[in-house]
Image (tube, rainbow, N blue to C red; front, side, top):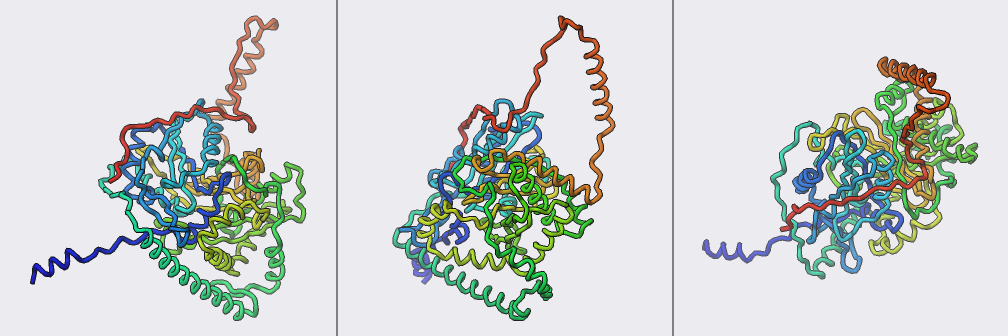
Length: 552
């Protein structure tokens, strides 16, 4: 009897592991991508001290078992029917994903040029869609890491959560992971894979339809209960006057601005940062939100940019696509995209900073109370119902049509408010990157980290060749807002003042002591930073090391 049971147990077929499929939202980012418009989320992280490449390579290798998706590639379903799946790359080689680049001078301008070049490239879809580039030898004895991940792999919020696998909140170097993982590609029967994919895709399709109908019914019920208006989360309806004043502005067609052109590459990347503490002081002073202040600064910076080019701003609007995290209380540990969008439309001709902040706050609150994110999420869900094969054919074409639903993307991602470390080296700065696409040829990402807010501006080189002017315009706008809130500018430290005064006295004495005939004069080399249009040359040294991840 026991032998029969054992025989049955041996002959009983084992259940295949569940297929790790992309979601509808993830697939859209995959299908919209084309040459000249890579859809990657990325960041430039700057650390103190010098990081060695071999040590860095071994460390990343030890952490890969914590992020299985970093070992998987995207596999399309047979005949394009159903959703793509994540499957382990049978030819995985870590040297494809972790590289080292040495800059000629180690300047910030060179680092920006390198990041721009990396962000302009498409990733190889035959392998996992991520990479890291170590950049040692920066001025000041620092090291940078440029990280890229395809948007189908993660959104900005989940991307920040993924960094926990590599960065540590303590300066001590963590022990190497002892986890092991088989990365053998699962041989599959094409017919079985097609059948399973269709069944799972149809099931997900039905769920999305039912969810969309439920969301639509909920919106109708809210509108009916409030006499055709909308209600806030606490049940308060939007005043009719406010509704009638803002609705035409929100529903108006988006007007193209000078940087709303079809993206064809290459790209430029610019960055700057401001104090999160001062932003919170302004928030408390005027009773707004941190996001309101960010949108105010971005609106003001782009107004200055347009005016600097002689473009009129009177009576014109800036429509920003603001991503909203819809994970709720589920945290940021999961991968993939779980976001909706809010279309924030702000007049460009408001120059007084406090008035502009109030205008942004009113519009943001209106959209929240009108449940705009839910409406946009419902629309996006319906778009995602188109078959994957049709999306793959239509996506690259649609991304080149002269359609401008928004002027730009502005995403604000909250990061950890404590320092992070990589192999014991403190991360000093963390600049985020959001991809450009369609006719949104300039976008902006903001990331808060360790008491600062880091701005990253991504732009098509033909649409905004002087993208870095936005760095100064953000600082100018923030200075005006700080002044309106009564925040005094940071004073010069006494030591620095004395040093500057001493330097001026020395220069004055040197000038007086110079002979008239110039016989004792000396030539002095002055380092001039690269200009905006200069192409920064760098020697790319991609070093290979013998250890590599063993595929089992």
